[in-house]
Image (tube, rainbow, N blue to C red; front, side):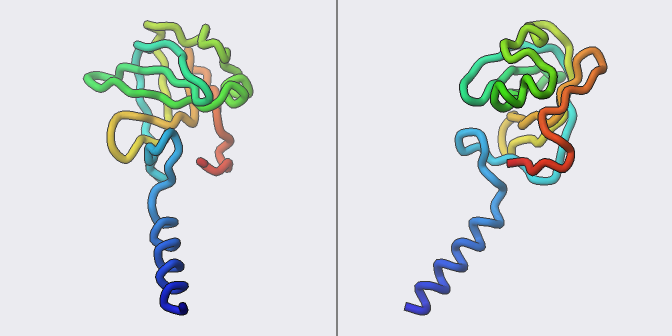
Length: 124
């Protein structure tokens, strides 16, 4: 019985060391934020996580903006009217461990930052 408890405790600690899953099982980095810039190529869609796609050079990024409350709190239109196709924006956030998905922390439109998360707010 004691071995089982120790094994379960070890398994739990190993799982806690993994990057946190957020968007439907996607794993994002915990400490590496990147910034991408380019035109919106897919408009705002989704529920409960709203997303857009941005073309940064040769890479097309799927940007997770979070829920409508977070989007509006950041001063963005929850219907995406301020991020239409073709509009150039910049986004800073945590990239997925694999693939080209980004959990947005800040979106810049016309040089104005829209913070989806406070600097000291936990990522997940």
